[in-house]
Image 1 (cartoon, rainbow, N blue to C red):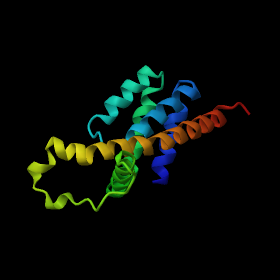
Image 2: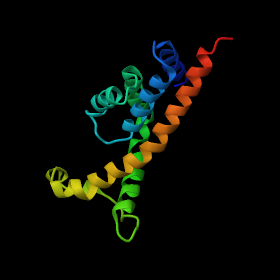
Image 3: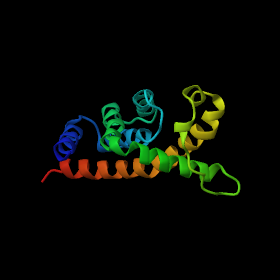
Image 4: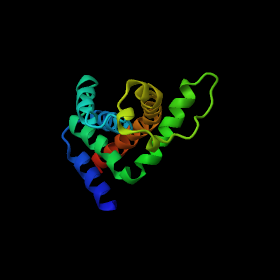
Amino acid sequence: MKRWSSEAIRKLITIDDSPESIARGMGIGVFLGFTPLYGLKTLLALLLAVLLRGNKIAAVIGVNLHDVVLPLVPVVLGMEYELGFWLLSQPHHLPASLELIHLPPHEWLRWTTFFDVGMPILLGSLMMGIPFGCAAFFMTRSILTRARRPD
């Protein structure tokens, strides 16, 4: 993991772009890495990087950073669901235990299941992604500014 992270930092430093653009791309990628939009994350990161003038390579690296915590995905999705459920419920309260194991597979693909489970996960992922994306932006910009500073 240490070798992978140092390799990712080396790749970011060698990108021929401004520290702000690279950091913007990294922030976009990390933000979208929290979303449950599997299969669309990289495409959305590239699109947002173009629209917000961020670096596309850094955006893809940022999306893939989320794969480092792959063993923790069930925990992260659970936290995102609980946060989203709490935000959507009136009055605010945490959800009862969510157990899709007891649902037959055809129930997982129904729109009602999407609104009951998918919307809270999507909202929670956006709320969790914002601070991590901002932190990734500032950390990346700081690292790149320091690394590129003439001594």
